[in-house]
Image (cartoon, rainbow, N blue to C red; front, side, top):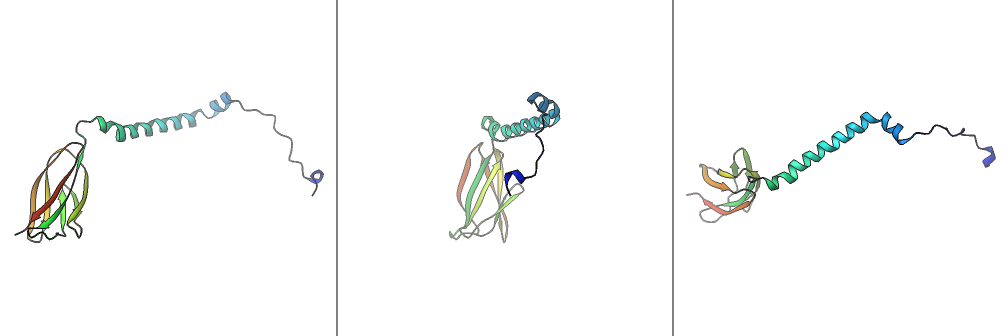
Length: 135
């Protein structure tokens, strides 16, 4: 098909939209978008930046559990309402975001539970090493 045989698309519109006209027409959408951007920015600020200046930032805890003879103990450990399993090597997965202060690490045994006092220090990951439990 030759160019001469092509259908005519019509004449371009002579209506021209200026930025101020477009802005006035979309004012509500622009305000909503700006509000969302400000809200998300504030959330990121409070979650990511503000804790750096907070004197009581949460800490964390990791460690291992073994029998008195030194064999790794596969069990569960708990701080507050958060429970973690110990793996084949007796170590438990890191407990993040624990508030600073005195806590109890509860080790589940077949004969009951052992409660160990733990002190969490602000903004520090504490490794308690290996805890030896049992008769």
